[in-house]
Length: 205
Image (cartoon, rainbow, N blue to C red; front, side, top):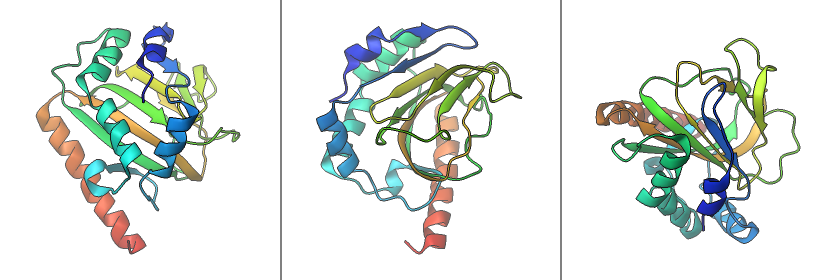
């Protein structure tokens, strides 16, 4: 399902931090199947897989994303050994106006990978930007439209600033975080899990 060769051949930037962007990682047929089986998410925020229900095609994609082979491709491209790092997978279905603020990720994370699952993206907001600083959203090294099948991955550093202009509405992706430790993984999953439960309670779902 996932075209690893496209990822393996994607250019890797080294400044302002190490990152890559790969397009067309999912074929049109597979993307349509995954989108049809995407979990129903009525609130903004990131949801752990344990809090979601989804169909067969989505489950198959998650299986490939969590495989050692996929992890090795990302490891090789980012120049990191991710094999010993616990993997956290979360899913976003909607974007809030507060989302996209500039940040560099916490030190509990070693590397991040995002696979977008939207239609062709025509909006000016919601486009991921790899930034040169923590203060200027318009000073970016790359802008990534969240078109379905587009994948972005980067090494977390104290300068791995990124963000996007505000957007409100559906914005689907799966996020993979290779964590610094099992303890860090446990803390993050507990935080996301509690947040997901509160959101579902407030929405009455």
